[in-house]
Image (tube, rainbow, N blue to C red):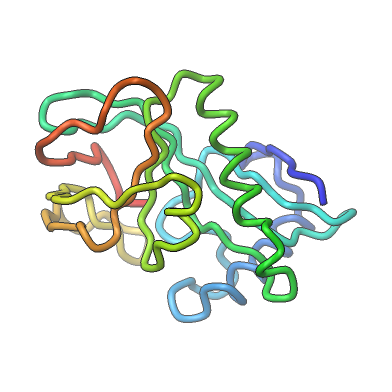
Length: 178
């Protein structure tokens, strides 16, 4: 398996078809049919490739957020998934490790993500942020809806990449929630 770093606009038609199938398989209840994203396209993806076949995906959003007045440079992990036939093989961890290597090399402070299941991420050094009073723009059906504020302590996770600890205060996503 090879991990390929590809910008979103470089995806071929075949890759988009494969991503759509993979994401629909892994997220059957939350992804609109035919899409390769949930709310918004990531800036780039890390793809686990077996030859020409995509068997894993991790989208990355590169941005700043404001936490209690402190500006952080982050990579936001989006739609981490591995084909069901390859789950348990370590591909999810490999994709996260590849993202971390790029993030450290580009001076990101943290990798953040939203996760219902915490076990894989905790094994990779992610911690739940508690409290996680978060503010973001809601997107529904390809339209901006409203500014939301909610405590996401049950799902907001971050991995520290440098010396800077996670600051206290409200998390302003300065955009949508990935």
